[in-house]
Image 1: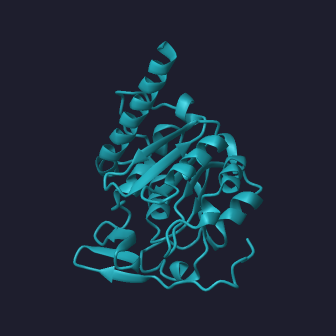
Image 2: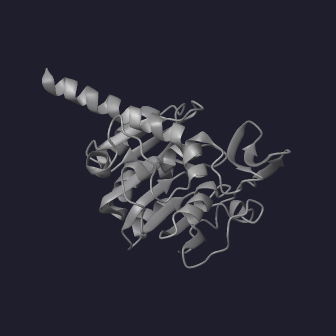
Length: 259
């Protein structure tokens, strides 16, 4: 992908390390990514664990797109656990990409490609049809407007296979949060689920036909096949919250139908 952002100045993130973790920050008040030093492939922040709940709705993807590298938590986890998945990561900030070795993001190989580029351009221009698209693109000012416009979400749907799924990390306190929710619902004809993370700062949007046709059922929580027991123990509370939100949404829809 051509580099379309040479004219911009990018803020350099910094790394904060303590005895057990290493974190990427743009400001001391906001953590962009955090890694457990002894378990570098684990997902340490709850919103990332919640995003992986797409495995409840769709099969392990053959081709996955990611917008936003950060400390590489999701890219590492998927590369490690989803052995049959090819992953294309687009990150606009070159200073973030420069830190990939510090966060033990594996080098590019046949299954992982990290490229510098604009996420909005990526979904608009890609010729591939993605099985899953993870959007976690934040900068020092929060959610870039280019990654939460109606055109962007429309392009996300167009970049997916018919049965593909968008998973987007939204900032719950954003002043236009409700507008972002409405745009996703419009782009996906209402086939969307919104789940708050356990830390109450992020909301994860799942959008796509897999919500209605997928394997997730209220009251049923099974370990997805690609995950080992330790990963499942880490992810299960977040996945249970997603299943609970799905149950609440379906119950509400049924109640409106019965009136």
